[in-house]
Image (tube, rainbow, N blue to C red; front, side, top):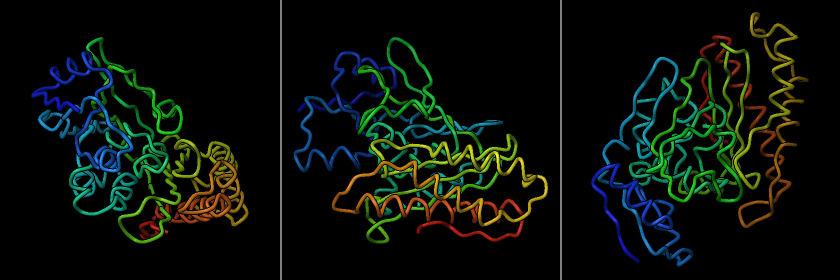
Length: 296
């Protein structure tokens, strides 16, 4: 196994073009586990730690451009106002050591359905900026995941940054695990209220072959909130609406049985998390001041 260590982004792109099978490594929190357990033995590792711009971010008028290697710790500490859902998700990532090393780019590159960042990214809405020596492009997050641990990257492309919509309303994230830390999600759920467009977006993790949105649940809730005048009145969402939203979210899941949980448990838990996070975000939107950070 050869180790490639470019000193700049341009050198990294050139190395990836020359060695398309090279596996990028920055935090290494996923790649090194696979190598240590001999699940993967790539011919080349492409070390991106010397590419400083991948650790930078920029807050714009409508979006945050988040470098692929910005550690979860920095997101938690410095971008909580702009990206509250992702900040909450970052809190649930493994241990402090891993949160200091791992970043969103690694989650996206691995594309595991259990990646903690995915539900928050889906709920917030974002585009993944990727680049090769041929040029750059942005991939909408809804089209990024193509299969189990597969994504829309071409063989010669690298993830440069993620352009995430700044929060214009409350966001929440909930995760079920077999313990409180250092755990892969049994299932996870993210939700974001977007009052400017009067829409709600969701994200489900570890309950389908890929991270997904609960689109039928979103469509139902968007219609119910609009027809009931909830956005203007800020009245309490009725139990029947919350129940239907939860059932539709649960129905969107397509999980499997594995060592961490059964498919039926995952579907049930997704529904519970959907109802709870909807309640938390709506209470925050109503201005009650109540805030419950969500690890179910």
